[in-house]
Image (tube, rainbow, N blue to C red; front, top):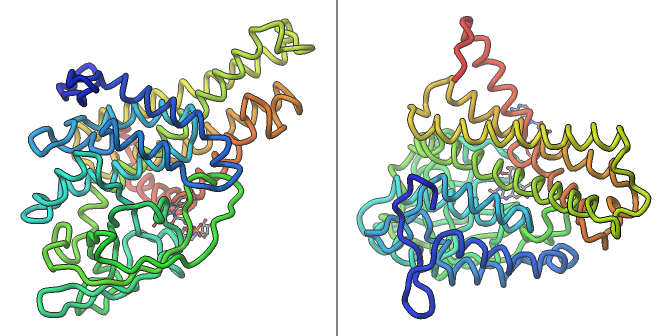
Length: 398
Ligand SMILES: Cc1cc2nc3c(=O)[nH]c(=O)nc-3n(C[C@H](O)[C@H](O)[C@H](O)COP(=O)(O)OP(=O)(O)OC[C@H]3O[C@@H](n4cnc5c(N)ncnc54)[C@H](O)[C@@H]3O)c2cc1C
């Protein structure tokens, strides 16, 4: 765990606890073995998910008293970065699951909490996120599909155009318009177990990148008990401000940074060996200045990630200057990590940079990172941040 974390490690075969770093390495090794195939086949990384279950990293954020590893947000970012070095899809799968778990840890109570957190802590329950809706795109704070109430139960009927890992999820956190409301801003977050739903595939998944995230469309229908609302009806905005927003942007940025770090590490390894670098010259000033820029981009994102983590840990995240920082991290990481890998391709050229069977896997990293600006549109964030910037004439940076 991180230097300040007191979280216990998961038990190894003989019952002795394994350190956090060992658990993450195990998951990273399994991820690396399957990454090329899952990308080619646009297949979900089932073996890597099994490893996240076995190591109980799926329960990283569940408090130890409730059966989890009791890790903190810094641990999630450390693990996500490491996994991103091998496969950005798997890193996003992990980070997004942890975002859902954080929402439950902070906002769920009573029977839902008592039933669900120990299962997640044991690595049994992988959670998918259902917020996007057809027609509203990434507008997180609105919902059109209505939640209906009947005799202590909630009826769900929800088309979900893009659900990462939906075909493999054990449970879903779903946003819907609150019962009896005509206002699309009244949004409720509901938990549904796979066993409580009919889960129908509603479309193929054949994207440019992020192919192993297996984020195809689903149609969810079912009935859940009323106590499976997370927080209060209509108060999803509070969950977004306190938890979903910061964790999404931190977690995604860690996945993108890890992906770019892995790309740079493999490239430097190739360049340092006379056997593999061929005609590429380490004396080339073009190569040296370009690779320095790549390194600088990653240093800047790493510093911003660490600063944002520190800020959201110690400050009120609803403050505009903290929101500006969190949004700025997402936009900056999405642009800089993509630009860094793009530059690596320019440095090493076609054979090492563009061919799909190159061991550097730069073209996969580049395809995956192309999704970063779209995964909650940078334009939406910049628009919001522009308004917040104009409100702060003194320019007090977080
Ligand atoms: C790999 C991947 C995995 C994903 N996994 C999930 C998942 O598991 N669950 C889930 O629910 N969603 C998921 N999403 C969806 C994601 O959260 C966003 O909802 C989605 O990327 C937004 O898609 P969009 O570009 O079609 O929509 P929009 O955000 O509507 O954007 C469409 C276009 O309109 C512009 N635009 C729209 N509104 C505004 C505005 N107000 N201001 C400025 N510009 C605007 C944008 O610039 C953009 O060009 C995933 C996305 C990706 C890429």
